[in-house]
Length: 147
Length: 407
Image (cartoon, rainbow over all chains, first blue to last red; front, side):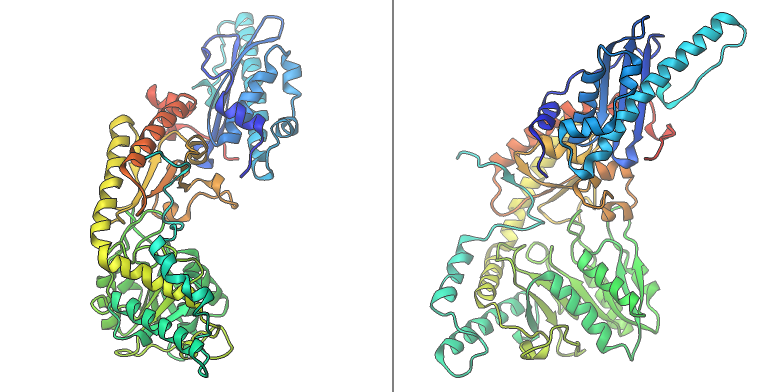
């Protein structure tokens, strides 16, 4: 299969590889995919009080296209507001990396990872606000992303 | 000697032509180019003599009674099709049941699927976790309607060598014909149609350093005499079993490739086994969570099928592009399904996605093995640094305990 230079470049030199502290209230974690399907992406964002993504990190189990898609996703969302980041479409990722048709699902997964990280961040914030309002009834959110 | 890239370690897919084979073939393109079916002149006679010599060489190597039992074909796929469909059609008055295994090559499985559409019944026997077929499972599947059992000599993905002699003893006792797809194993592990009671055997030249486009089907002529319905109609070549002008240079090359195995095959297998073990040991020394797929001992000398946990196969192949290998990962197939062989052996899908098949052969060197080992070790470590699953593993999280969303 022939891959684009951009894809290979992201695969060879992935940006923003790593792990953020998932217990940090300003961090949102998205974990999407499944080992049995051959790809798992974990994308994390660190959001400023103003709602801007200050940092993003990823780790991906998957093919070259999945690794490149998640690397590109972290690059694109850094410095964006969470609403801007949430509007990124898989088709933009697929186009940027010239993904072949059988690899489109990798870009879908990257979009899902961004959305999932943002949702996790929002859920944590909502839980914290609720906690501040009524300390006795702290909701406990257990999701795959909390692992 | 300088290494030549990419290093070829995909000898189950095909092998390079041995130069000695090429030399044997060359005269049959330009000088002795005759049609082996031409009876009226020396060009035809020369071609026919070369074909008959080749037939004897191949027959002798697999323990056949005579060259008359060798039907030349275009390759293994055609041999498998001819054996299975040809027997099924000829013996349909006797029965309509065929037994094969879930880990056969697609040429066998899809021939059986075609027959199912035509009203035949097929039993697909599972292999064990080590890739071995249990002869008792074959015996248990035999009914009074069974006409044919088809089991491969060695699996093309995991290299597991099947107990062909034991299965042959059962089919002979029960009066059922036995076809063996011997393509991957022949030359590399003992194969003898007489002592193993094999009635039909598929062979191909390009897996043994011969040319592509030529293969053979061994068809037993006595005790029992096996009959086929030809699947290709025409001039009645190959005793009516396979019409079509014979590929004389290919057949000559096939026989030359066989004669090299006859002379050096045993020593070569030992050398290749040594290289394979060297690669395996080097990888095992440096990496944890690497699993061998297939049987640890009953396997082809050149086969090393490993699952590198927490790393996806295609991602790894991209990282080790200096070496030509293949993977059971879904991402390398058009269907996006991981290897049906690994899955039917009961391997976790995650491990099926993480599998790489190294196929070592005649022209691999120790220097190449050392280079590949170092490359693989380095890249697996790097990709594990990128893998969220490896991080969880290191934190002691059981990946199977997580509710993954299928996609």
